[in-house]
Image (cartoon, rainbow, N blue to C red; front, side, top):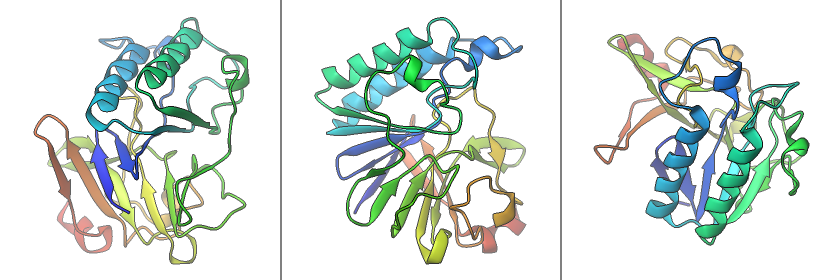
Length: 227
């Protein structure tokens, strides 16, 4: 299956997957963002829908940011997201993450713990190991960024670093105002997700959406000492 890397999201067999939207983060942060993060998420998703024309859109967990409160406008943002997906003639699938304890208060549709794209590929949030086996796990949760010459860039991680040699495909946080975690010196034990059991075979991938380029770096095991 071909994986197309886009702006903090991937397209796989007509399925657009993005993770860690963290709606409501700006409202709970002491740092004022230059733009309301929910508005930014919606605008960039709309661009992706137009560019990729997916059949299915999967939100791979941590749709919400706060564990115990729902800031104002969050329900409106989620409704607007659903409307944009419907307008694009796509199906919306919502997978729960560890932050989504109150998701049922603002989302009356189905909430899954995983989504299977095909017989090999399962989408999860990544905070816990699912009760199904797969050859490829697509997940979020860890918010990876790569630091090069003092500059941090959101990155994907892809390679046979999952359980029993399965492929792990870790997505960066779709919310641009969510702090990223530099992966330069990380070992498997540094990842929060139990689905990353080996860091060395993971390849960092950086998508430059403005230039339309996808940059793939060597595996961390051989590349990290250059960083």
